[in-house]
Length: 455
Image 1 (tube, rainbow, N blue to C red):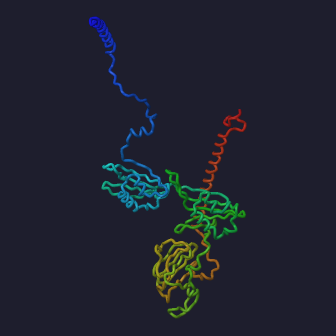
Image 2: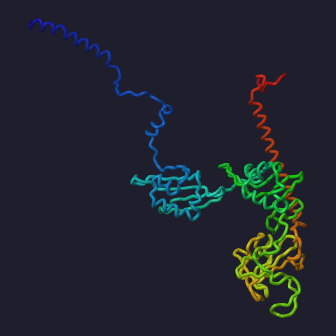
């Protein structure tokens, strides 16, 4: 039996060996292959977004544009970035030198650059930028010494004109505001028209209105800010009422009719509230010197420190001590008219020779300086170089532009109407182009391609 097994092995083994050698010779020239676990091959565009982010770890510094939400403060949005509270406090303290962080508004954007600290636990603020208003922005930079430095920059805006035309449905204020006018612009318009227009009775639904005004546009963001109201018109009972904002050379801006008359009809007859007349205009016995003398103004008795108002818009021609008048102010108004104020206790802050003042503005305070027996205001009205009694003038003079000032005004009116016409033409062209575009895009009622023309 053993001999049989041995014979079998002797026969089979050489066969196995021969087969193995044949297999080796057949494959020995093939390159070596390393076998690895296989994965589907995908292009970077096919890779899931989160997979690419996981594989590509971005190194700092980092930058983000943050949008403030309700309840946000600058401190807490910096905290969410991992900026230490002490560093955020230093940054905000530096920022307050040029901008109050409390003025930040909901949806306002803040751009920041920050980087990881060496310990890897927190982040350092490197740079911050925000818009403080339309034409200013603020930048905060961390210097090499680790301190923060804030700087405010002015951004140049593009000056344009804007035009609003409409008719009243609810009220002038509501309808013009809806059309794009600003509250300040409408306040100026209503105040200017109120001298000639009764807004309770004259203004009714259907009254037409027109406003033409300055705008200042940021071309980067597209945001714009309304400027001054340059022209306004109301049409009711088929009669137009127009006003123009004009500043004569050397004067202050105001609203005028097309004839050059200021819409502000009169000077204040009483430039002080709650005062009694102690002494009127005309000849009187001088209270100190005892002889009869022409009293060229009106004396209003009032306690020391009572505010005194400018009787009208104008330029302060004199503001100093002036002999027996004591502390004295003289204001030059348009139309060869002046008003004078004497015996003042003191002048109001910011009022000096050459200052521009507006009607109703406080220019000083009642006193008893100069030749005065008690606290009072001595008030004078001077027209064409002559003193007049302000209490007896039934209608104090209208301010009217004359001479060179009126010629400047006529040129200004022409410029306004030319710019207004151009603006309205541009709006009309855009409207026509939009209608044509919509007509080309809309299907023909007969199902015919509107772009095809009949031969």
